[in-house]
Image (cartoon, rainbow, N blue to C red; front, side, top):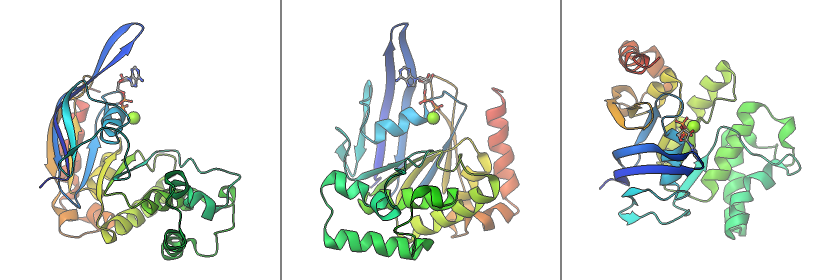
Length: 254
Ligand code: ADP
Ligand code: MG
């Protein structure tokens, strides 16, 4: 069964100027352990879609199910990671990584030990007592990911998670993140405006229309499903084909 289901979802924002239909008739199912990327023009409702899955917004019509259960509000089943890493500069790396557990009141010796182990496994061993400003952008983003993983979400929502990083770092961190998420068998929905990033990381790329956002097309990416890493996918002969097809769809609006 699909882990995440959006059934005929639409969302209208009510503003002083009137209603804005951000999303219309969205039907989307995400399978367990699937990595879905969403690309689309700016303002087409990508972040809105993630906020709906996160339970931060309620749909105007339709419904959203996670594990068959309707989403009624934020829950520990869903981890949300944004473009800005939102690390607190006055907290150490360890204390930043523990923040989600503290907020949920699930900080125990066991969960703290797990977080320390993740820091160790993901190249941050020895940095526990450092402060965010002492780390590179890529390392900071890994701390944010560990903080999100600490609450053991089934679904991870990533909203342009690498756009604050330079190109070199984006490639390296993307490679890392995919390795970590596959190891942990997470289900992922990632929004990005970077087509190569979307294709290299995902099992499936969803292309959206301009506002009101609807699903225009979807592309199954053979490489990641065959176990290739993002860098290997970028070097695969079929990569350009996917890129060009998606780029053409998006450039109809440019
Ligand atoms: P994207 O992430 O694809 O750039 P968003 O989901 O942020 O798009 O926004 C979709 C549309 O909804 C945009 O036109 C945006 O201006 C509008 N919008 C987003 N948030 C609000 C809000 N809180 N109130 C009113 N309009 C909003
Ligand atoms: Mg956005």
